[in-house]
Amino acid sequence: MNLFVLLKTVPDTVEELTVAADGVSLDAEWLRFKLSDSDEHALEQALLLKEKHGGTVTVVAMDAPELDESLFMAFAKGADRVVKLAGDLAAVQSFSAARLFAEFLKGSGQPLSADTLILVRSQATDDLEGEIGPFLADLLGLPYVGVVTSVQPEGGSVTVSKEFAGGLRGELSCAMPAVLGIQSAEKPPRYVPIAKVRAAMKSSKLETIDVTPAGAPARFPVEKLYKPESAGRAEMLEGTPEEVADRLVDLLANQSLIQRGR
Amino acid sequence: MTMANGVLILAEHLRGEVADITYEMLGAGRKLADALQAPLHVAVIGRGAGSVSSGLGLADAVFVVETPESEVPSAATIARLLGGLIEQKQEAIVLLGWTNLSMGVGSILSARSGLPFVNFCRSVRAEGGALVVTSQLFGGKILSDVRLADGRGIVGVSAGAHPADAGRSDRAPTVETVTLAAQAPVVDFKRFIEPEADDVDITKQDVLVAVGRGIQTRDNIELAEDLAATMGGAVCGSRPVVDQGWMALSRQVGKSGMSVKPRLYLALGISGAPEHVEGMQGSQTIIAVNTDAAAPIFDVAKYGARMDVLELLPLLTEKIKARRG
Image 1 (cartoon, each protein chain N blue to C red):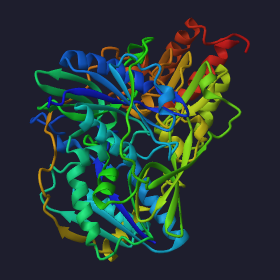
Image 2: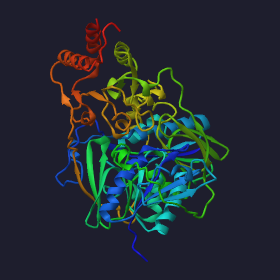
Image 3: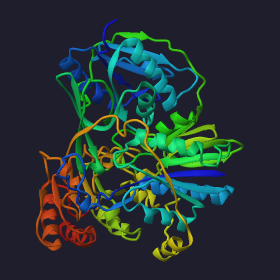
Image 4: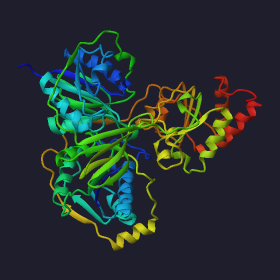
């Protein structure tokens, strides 16, 4: 199979996020970047498909801070080719990014044949402009399914399961090539030791392709970013774990949530 | 020809049932349309679309577009039909749910219509001729305001951001069946896959002990199970825990999983990303424990503690056992 995976790093939301002085971006000094969860799953699903059906996994990403480590990690996990699109891309949002990826995919030297799947994240935490998958599919004239949790290609078409709500899923199929928005891979993303990533840094080479965004990088300006001011913020219980546990037991008992002799 | 000024809502329905997000958008859309002195419309698209329109009377008109060829039309099909409606009915603003069912519709419609698409919306308001959209980014830690200067755009609205009751109405809607050019679908809907059976239905529990990434390992889930057993409740989790294979899909709370409203929801090591919060914000009492003081879960919790859940869990279980006697 001819498998493409689009990757992007996003700020790690476990870290403190601070709005920069310009009021419309995050303060980069304090940011740590990582692949979004959904990206990790898209890569894993591609690797699982390669293991089962053979073929190659090509990873494509737009250049961004702290990207290379994630790309070498993709090599260490089993990607065959890793391409970085470089240029003046800092302001590029999803729609503009989809155009750049579409141009690359049309001229990548790997035709979008009937054994091609393009796997993307179902959604990233910073995709204000919408999901990249459907933009890309529309530009390439290919079918798209999002929120996908299993992928079974067979004879030029692919059957997927897509999540709805309440644990309900649907089975859908479409012809290949196709663009799939991966929510979860069929297995948890594999772990690679950092030594293997280091080895990949020595033995593998990232390809860099210079690109120029056509048209505006974003279709609307962000007026401001700010931290939510919550009206109903939690009453915080202070103290040692021992003290907090005592307070919680009192609170629960007062609400009749602890029943004697149960 | 009049200038496009309508507000169009994409109704969400599956298996003959209208989802709450539809009413949430109707309530918000009514206010927006009134402020703009514009008509409020609803599009119901799909097979059997005509039969689910009875509760949509808050809108000035309901447009029914039947798609007999598919029980669940694809994002591309819905986007194409919505595109047709926008032109025919002179719509300026489209509201659709940021939900699994509608995911993709906004992007494709945006690509084809040239209208901007702003996702993750918590609130939307008219300011002069502009539309200002407030969205939640980065797992709920940051808000963003976008101003669409000409007042036209597609907005993806988060579930649970607006009250559904504000969108319900007993009034009979004005329904118009619209026929738009059909195109053979490129994605075929085959069948529904029912939720996995579980001996515990987490939607029927009084007490839920919910764990997230902060539980760190599969083995530590036992600590949460001990607490749940002590309190006569059940264990559930957020997406990352289920994705790791540490818990069954039937125990997942949030956008793809269950919506729960227990008397007590103990959120342990859960950051409170919007996808999770929409499934548990209706709980009576929420108590959150997380090492990150800025975690959005503390915005929906009544009580919170900033600490490692692994330190607190055994102590809490032990003390509840002691209190129970």
